[in-house]
Image (cartoon, rainbow, N blue to C red; front, side, top):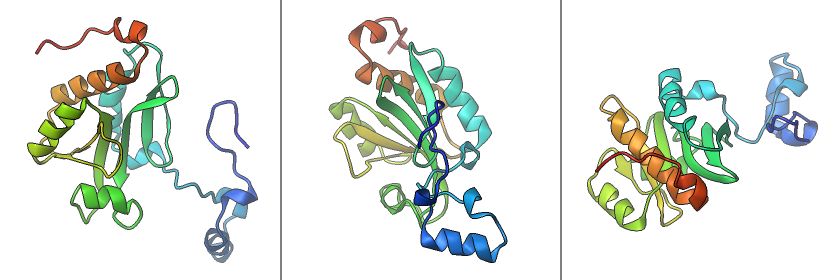
Length: 174
């Protein structure tokens, strides 16, 4: 069942047998345990979310919502940015692509295919997730160039937004 706000409401079908057993063993109500792999926005450092929000809220009709894990920003029903903390034990495809064996915060976004190749060829912090020809991943670590991230988010939005909305966006010079 979905609430008007969008996230799934807990019901028995959303819990695995293992989660229900652990909840009983820990004395936690089964109703408090959910599946779906959804993580809280708290899994992503709040300073990262604040930076994404400051850029994304300026983009016409874009909105933020919880993703299957982490947080994503969308234009209509298309995701133009997704940020999450990769746990190699759970998001193995991300961890392998990002070449990490420890929890790491990553961003995925869209870019023109020729730019995808250039970004990935430049090496760290960029990587190619195993899906979508126009999808790029970026490890968010201490050396993040936040101005570049802002430009990449705007470009990603403009690739997926309807032309009339994309035309309303001021793109960085360069």
